[in-house]
View 1 (cartoon, helix red, strand yellow):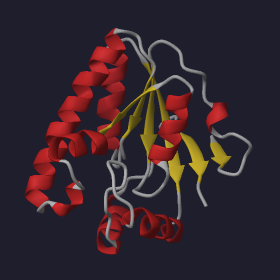
View 2: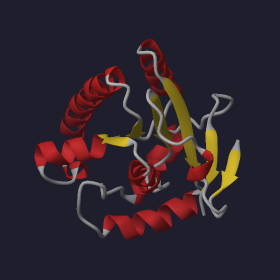
View 3: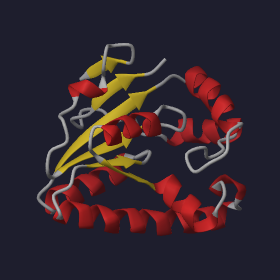
View 4: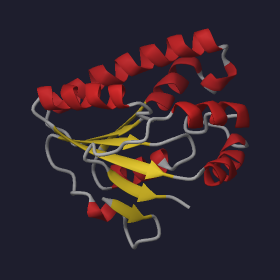
Length: 177
């Protein structure tokens, strides 16, 4: 299901927070995942963010680390996010995962984890063209904070090459401009 960003309330088409619902935000850097996740949080979902977990641990933008150290922090943050997700699912809390879910294998693994804990997943894909991403990232890269991870033009190009767009996965696509 594709919903244009400029529709009155694309998030409004998603169900209100219900026990055991987990929304998986999916998209490239700059696509608006954190913005939409925060809107869901304002509606009553509990938001979990890998970027914010890393920021809490190291106190600065993880993009400033060398690639090996960044991967280590990413893996640790992913594990922490999964543990917190499991705890929240056991408590039947509605959750939104602010994470890129850049490949199908990761999406499938999380879907299985969610279903295995008796919860229901909703995959929300924020689709944006490369020019939109570059424009948004130029603005975001000038900011500081846990939701402002720096993404260079070169890194965005690598992300664009490796991102596996959800297709026929039950996703809700929201077109970004």
